[in-house]
Image 1 (cartoon, chains in turn blue, red):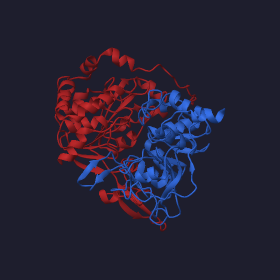
Image 2 (cartoon, rainbow over the protein chains, first blue to last red; image 1 turned 60 degrees about the vertical axis):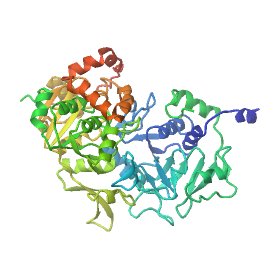
Image 3 (cartoon, each protein chain N blue to C red; image 1 turned 45 degrees about the vertical axis):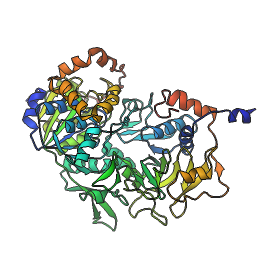
Image 4 (cartoon, rainbow over the protein chains, first blue to last red; image 1 turned 90 degrees about the vertical axis):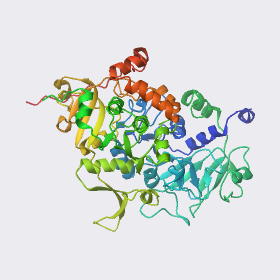
Length: 259
Length: 301
């Protein structure tokens, strides 16, 4: 019976995080892709329900169609078969600032209750306790993409009340974007515990919990008293086809989703 | 007039202590051979500018060439951290000036276009302008819109690697072109290392592919595999094992010193570096050919 077969599917919560992100992508979306988990989510969506999804890479690629998994943000596999290759300035000016990007994926060492993201420093800027890589293209993706999807593993260290440095701005307390920012800001967050969205006051709340995860698990891994609305559902588990593509075609060596 | 010269002479003539230097190439075509020559010639107090400092600047920082770093993302792409960079920041020996990719790209754009600044729709609600006072709000003179601006940058010298050029220095690049064109036009001097020098007719048969005219090139140097361990599209793939192994080398200051001594100081030319790596390993990085369809430019006379 199908229902029984489905319960026998063994998967990790990190795999479900990527699969949930892929399901949140629509056919036809123009997506600003980062390396690693977003790359997996986009390629998975493209192979299943979103064949006309367009992948954009900051290195200067529109409509990438790679034959292998990109190992870096400027991997040679992104070039052949792409619809267009242009300069990095063109990507930021004419695609992102022009308003052509539907979804931008972001992750970071710290995410806070309003979807602000920190990839710059932990602690004081001049004398940090941890120096992180910095913005890259994240700050402008946060300012300009129609919808920002946040993806990454969740813990009390990564889901904090207030980030120590706002690299990429989220929503203002009380709701709304920072004045001047044209993009819609954080729309969803996908972690290894659940899927999150943002309420009218710009605050993150639980949208669905992954199977086996309780509201208390989420509270224990969140640095602020997060809202868990009554009656929320469970994230549908991976289908065998989603898992097969993810494991056999997209991450066969387990670079990103090693159990 | 031919602009072809050897890399040693080009670096000696055009890179000076205290210069502002940009060595671009976004993952693709990173000019490693030129960086090693700068290390060998012992340049000091450089201000190094680059969106992604990458392993190339980790080496220059580790070798003591760099006083200040201007950047927008400092990691070992797809692998982890740049430890020489992080040590120098922790020790307080390296001054940093930090942007986002868009911001630093627009600094080159403004410099290349001879404008004082570029406005952009970015940095609203971000802490980056507080961390870097050169990122400033600016009001539109044509309405009530608020924007942010970044100042032009005009480096003393840009250094790039490319697939090919003719002897006049007309440089052709295909695949990812990053911010090289803007960095080249922004800079006072320009050194380009190339996989090969080709006849003028080859360049002129496909002028759309010429990213940089010889007009702004100071020196062009034939340096096959000059971007290893990064890649040159159509010539060789990224040597990903090198990037993976750099993590352990750069984590330990003594190991980094040892690496620089063995692979840069005591390996004085690119040819000897390639021999030391081994031709079999380099051959394994070569992709099978995959040609574009020719286009018809037409003949008008």
